[in-house]
Amino acid sequence: MSDKMKFKLNYKGVGELLKSSEMQSVLASYANEIAATAGDGYDVYVGKTRANVSVVTEEAAQDNYENNTLLKAMG
Image 1: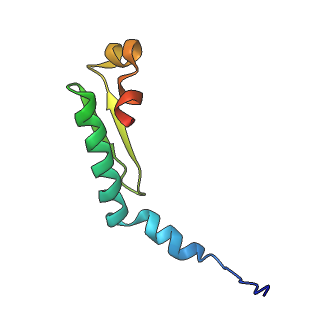
Image 2: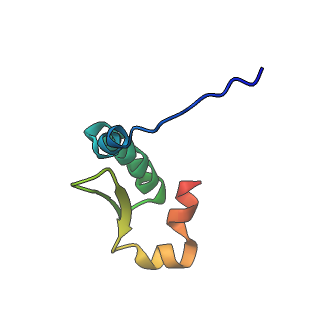
């Protein structure tokens, strides 16, 4: 019973998925959870041309440097 299965990735479809607004909203919700867990001074940046997010800090940079707050907020 050696059934061979072939899988061909649809690169165009994957590209559309990664750039979709649905994917951006999923990523933004994760980033918002992390920023909320980290506390005040952490903001979320959502990319404009593809689905990517960043949790950034300007006010709490020292806190993050000393305590690894973002890493701990990620779990």
